Image 1 (tube, helix red, strand yellow):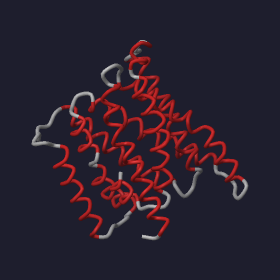
Image 2 (spheres, one colour; image 1 turned 90 degrees about the vertical axis):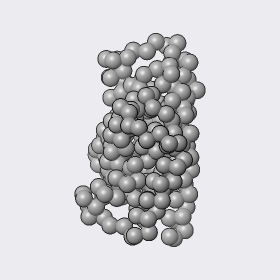
Image 3 (cartoon, rainbow, N blue to C red; image 1 turned 180 degrees about the vertical axis):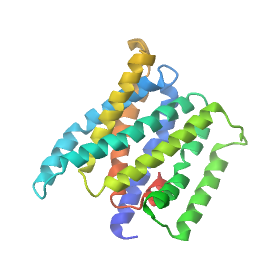
Length: 249
């Protein structure tokens, strides 16, 4: 790995640390409000947080080259579709199973990313990458499962979430060289928030008191897990193999 790849690997590791803590905050928020409300608010906060960074990035990039706004919007919406489906089913799964088990099942995208990257784009990896994936899955099993190998309904939701997180990772890899990355991240957050808000109004309509009780977890999920960590993912994937990126995540 060159110095740039090492840097973005470490940056993605920091993003993974943020997401690791997010499982605890997601579980905490689920005690007060439903999954659609959680995602509507967290992604709204994430998009809002990224607005000034997006404006700055667009202005800076426009000085050196023409910014392809149309492709950036399309990329943000496509990755946003995968993101919101993954996040909703993951949140439903987290509310019905343990936090540690949630982390283990969600991490199955480290197996799915190289499989779908090969099936869709014929991207191959070195044998040491596949060995690393195997070690990671075994290690996560020892850390998370604690002897509980039963399959619950929530586990199925989590695995579906892992599948759609896989598609989101692959979509970012496909568009990362063609778009303004921070703006793409902001658009995917905004799109995910709008979709969640629609479902929230139909199925949940949690009152304000419940939202206030969950405000600290929501702030963490919005600013750190969504605004910062997902942007780290988008930026890092421009410089890293998606399989390596998913392994770190």
